[in-house]
Image (cartoon, rainbow, N blue to C red):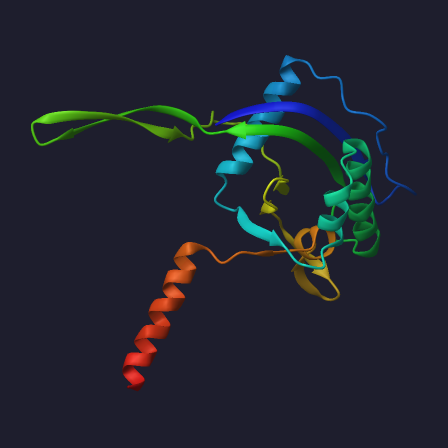
Length: 197
């Protein structure tokens, strides 16, 4: 995977403070910071915990994103909504919110196979990660072009039950059914219909 980072803004969210510490501009980036955020993004993309989601029709965030291209402003709005959730639900821990504007594309590597008595070489997507790379506890990777959200989130106690808050209360999105789950549901329905008949 090739990641090109355009800009990063960092907001500090501590519900013990009276208000969030919101940045007014993007960070100055050096080589170490580029390497750090690239590693975090690559790890988030490759995570087994990621859920593929889509914005709900009434998502306030999706509506805001559709007409607001001001990177700093939209990052501050996200931080504000998350901070409100932290104040309302004390089980959500303090943390840093890094909002990253980036472009990505798959990286490729060679793959050689022996078939019969010959060899075939091809190109396959490369998904290698260095051991010990930094990891985001939670992440939302939003593709503005098609509205797809790749989400890594944790459950916290909200209204006396464990629930997700990023998908439901911040971004207004829902998990798209995975292809395996769709196939399984179709097969189960077909088996039930055959048994019934």
